[in-house]
Image (cartoon, rainbow, N blue to C red):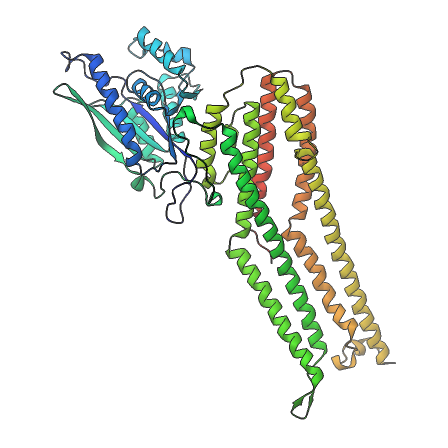
Length: 564
């Protein structure tokens, strides 16, 4: 995972944010030939206690606040991995296990020397740890045939998913393909912070000392620890605390969704008001300019006639309208109002989608395959961990009831269902597009008629003069009343209608919403024909991916747009 770039000083989160600690270490933490006189069980117990201390100190070392919650990511090999898993269990740290092959093959694997990686006792211990409630995910991340490649791909997955890397190595250990050294190199390439601890024994006492390369956060990247996006400023959610006290995922996700939805509505109203003011002020200023142009100032000697005072007032009004419109345009563009609107709506829709996929007990990783803005990733990772912790994968019970509930609440509900939503939005966009197009043609035709009427009156004014002469007459010979003003004003109104349609993205919305409605109606039929839970979950994932893709397309299309 990569954190979003900070354009301002780092702001600690006010809501729980997960920091994922990737881990790797030596299979053999102690050199048996050098310490044959020491009890291996005692050395392991000492190393375990030192690792517990280091994990507690890690929060301070990384500059984490109370709202940061650790989550471990590792394999579960013998030696250091097993020690790390036990430490996470002891400290109540959630852990994700990423395996280079399925569990049974991994635990019975044989190394290049023909010796099994796990002894019977070690295999039993590993299986017991994998049943621990602190293990929230067990996932195979490689399907390669070659052993070294499998471990290398597992290392890649750990580095990719982690915020920081912690390594535990035996003093003088030599790197192997897919081993700890390989993981450190991969972390350096992608600029992930690395803390390396060396295991040493002095006078029978085990110590864990920092070894190079230790790459602090400030040197690995100019970003700080994961934090929440600015869109969630002001949101307060209780500290997660011990894993056994974590709240349901829907509590966390629901709080973010409600917060973002409220902000989205507020910014949406503000955007529409600004757009109306910008377009309205410029159209009204144009009308005043036309009126003023047809009513020149008149004087009696050096004295301005009383009727001309109105013209001066109209000029002042025109200037104020232009300034007001320009000011609103500047505030809309430089105040980031559009960005705030689309960002809050996007994160609200993502949270709504995660709620539904959690109810279906499906795979939540689809979100990370979409072009979600990086600033949302820490929150999404936290949601992922909570969903893994609180909504485990399907147990095969009552899936049909969950399917019916999903279809009803997500698709067919007349108020909150997505089919009715996209259907009504498509009709609304088409209706607005029709009115905008009608207004353009209506006022364009009126402008042509006004100009034609002016031409006719001009020709009649000059009597028997030919057409060419009439067209080339001085302006003073052509009537300059209402017809002339309307001929200049109507084109502005016509263009204003097109500008409003473009600012509202009516063409794109009408087409997108109509296509989404058709897709969801097709999905509805597929849901009714689903014959298994797996098919149901796949349909949910496909539906949610499409829904989020539509919102993301809208986000990137509108995030930096303004009016005018």
